[in-house]
Length: 439
Ligand code: ASP
Image (cartoon, rainbow, N blue to C red; front, side, top):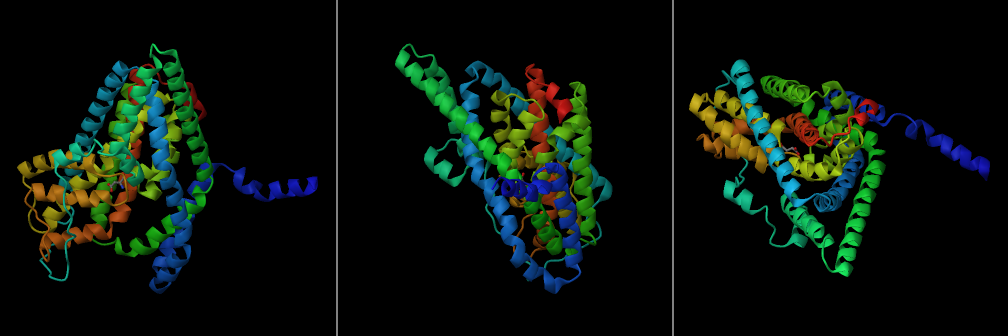
């Protein structure tokens, strides 16, 4: 019996004992190779996707499963363990950081699009066969109004992140007040409630750790599907858009985050080492919201941010701070302008800076959400996506490669949340940099 147990352990040793990140990277590289090779055999793509999709979907479902409980419990715990006055100060710092970096991001996207001029000379003409996607662009007041849930349980069941954040913060603050109640019995009850929520948050992180053991397989499958389906199409003129977006992402990563970290005397390379698990997960899942459990864990374990800050700033960031999406919106608006013979004027570009910043705030942290917000940006500069128009055709081209762009922008979205959280924690003198060396 004993020998059998030893044998069983040994059989899985190669998997569980090897470095998780190495396994994830291996999954990423092998998946890309398999996908690209499959792209050369178009008839094989469909049956391949049909047979392996299940294993990728499981990964996404597992991550989605854990998102709402993680946000809820970690945010309640976070809000309950922070004095209301401090929540206000940290909140303002986080918001200012998120807004400024997003506005910078759009500007970077526009600058690179002005240099590389994606789509210039395309001269797309309208084609009745190509239809623009009809989608209602939300108004700003609606975005703000929807933060307050009319029914918290409904928000929880639907997974509406902003209303959940709002409710969890209010609930947590309520606990922190009741903990100080003069009625000893009620105060004790609030303490217990806090302990239960804290233990629930810990439990969720444990589950996340377990889910990550499956990540290498999920990553392999998801990447191979994207490359098999999008790879061959993502050539030609769209290559310029892709390269422009990715260049913008990299410059923002190194220039803005690297710069801000350096100003705060924090090592950029060490930051990347600590953050990369979340960056890669965001890259393959294309969902800031889905990556949140990992983002929360690495920020705490590898980057030494206390939960009082991260549990507030990260769920908020995963919902409203989308620097990658902002860059994407800037570049794609320019592409559509160039491609349809309507290059954006300086004033139009200024408008894009404002609307794309707001649109990125309104973008949900789910795959492809940015493409919907692109409609809002285009509308603000008078480029309406109507059926059969050249603008609809150009927009449809962007949709064709959206998955590829979504991977990079989501990864930057999540990185921006982590960089901001680390910087705010440092400014609050609450960053445990001793964890950085171990990462
Ligand atoms: N997929 C992105 C995210 O989750 C949002 C977007 O589509 O831009 O961060």
